[in-house]
Length: 483
Image 1 (cartoon, helix red, strand yellow):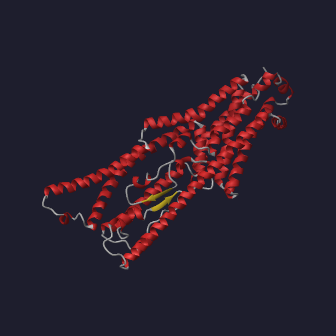
Image 2 (spheres, rainbow, N blue to C red):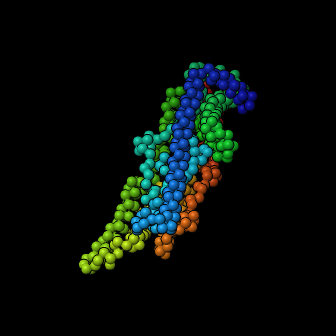
Image 3 (cartoon, rainbow, N blue to C red):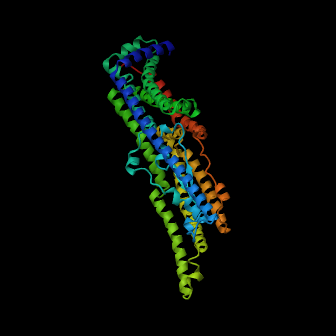
């Protein structure tokens, strides 16, 4: 193969593509779908940021109100007894709701390209000293119908639409000319027939790949500015687009090298596209769910809340048994009306319920971890699945970042709970100094920490299959014949 023959074929094919209506249709499809994806992504990020700002504004107002109420109590401006649930000095009730801390996962600059897990989790959580289910599932997720249909983000365009654009231009690399009867003349007049076919492939595949990269750069620049374009995460995204596009272009070349008709190539490639982008990912998820079944989110929520209800019932049953065993006991003897006693009983219920809820959620999270581990191992059966997960991780909305956020959330919940429960056990009232020392949720990690893992996954799940296809395409195109 000579480079001059390759370059000549590339130039000639490029001139043909400029007059080809199919090529312009492909460009229009990529531009339109990318614009819709970025518009949807911009709205999604704006909604997430607004939710986080509202939650933090509400947190500030609540804390200011508690400090003011505490100052009024300290100054003696409040007459009569304050109910425990409204008392800013009561550590159990303050930590259990009124002083709830906001834990938020801020969108990254590239979050606009993939929704990932952000559709399934609220942008901000109000962490309390209660059980985890009391704040993890306090807010509803998005409309189930919307989640079932999925959002149109750039990852969707990259995984599903982008391959179709490449296949639409590359499926008849040599079959089209063979059917027209011009392939023999093309190959006979070329110094290197293989170079000619590779030049044609580079031109046809290069057009949608360059268009996709250009659309990605334009969308990120227009909506997020120039700074994200200089990041390592964005460079990794561009490399992923190129590798994924090369995979599909080389697959088309391999199928075309079989010497079949254009119709055969189109049907075969569509079948492979469906298998790689839909059937294989669905099979991986179904297998993981079958081997390690985990209850649905609603089932887990009900189980966690049932544990809380059981703890309340046990408390009530204990009081009922005491009343039966001591029929002459008065309310004063049982201390049912004393605020301090109600607080202690509430704390005992919370501790019992928290232990049960954590047991329920630990079993659920262990099953999910097994599912994710198996899915990660099997994801390399589908380059599309690897691509989708990688783009989500690059955008900071994938499993990796949310797993880190979940671990941070668990640690913070324990610190928040210990802060208030230790004071409640010691019988200490909350002071202004305590409010000033409230634990704060740390800033969540950005997506940069996942870059190494994403690069490895892309190399193994997309790069290696593309390299194998390149070898097969090279051998197949060398055997290409006119008839």
